[in-house]
Image 1 (cartoon, rainbow over the protein chains, first blue to last red):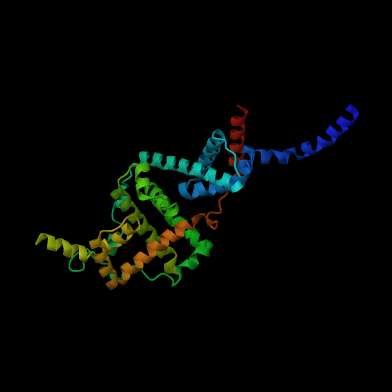
Image 2 (image 1 turned 90 degrees about the horizontal axis):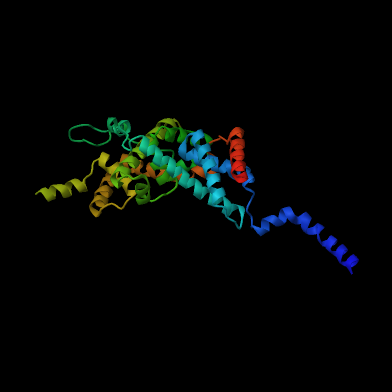
Length: 220
Length: 93
């Protein structure tokens, strides 16, 4: 009997053994080895963070912090995409932490920026006060500005322009416009008033619009 | 008469006010008075109408930022290794 059962077991064993590396993943569905995370998701997370923090060193830190936090909160996943969005969720919080830190370091009312830089485009006095000085008013952007979205040079211009915003203003612009975070949530998390937020967003749009008009649409 | 003056002000924003209102409209609902005033202004002002379209375009563009065609910058190999080592140290603990 023994001689019969052993061969059977021996026959059975090699199969699970060979399958073990793959078999591991179904046991914890799709969870990739934390060491492989960096290869799988590092690039995406880094770009995501860099876009929002505009500082490669800070973006690297945020990615590392994300992986470490993920390690502590170890989870299992149905698939790689679920793992990725889980990691992005953690990264978002890390980015918020950076924004909060930035808001503590520099006052959220950046005076240089609030010095009304567009005022030179408006009539200062008299009957037309507060109206555009006609030749300085917004120009017509190419009939279908959407075409710019496929253009690498457009994106470079866009990011260069956005990069000129003061950090705090850039932070709220990213949260509101890139990530579609609700005004109230931004205010609560960054501890600023709504009216302050609206002024900052107005200034950000104004500055970015002007920069794009000068450096992209005006040159088309 | 003060309230009448206020209504008149609200119904006839100048360009500076009109661009601010258009920005605000992207983040909060405007009051009825503000909406009417803005609509009247935009019907008459080509610059502010363009401005409104353009800041909406900024939003649309910003939401496409992650689509890949952005920064060419990649996670530097040194950083990649450093993060891996840090993770490994954490695992070994």
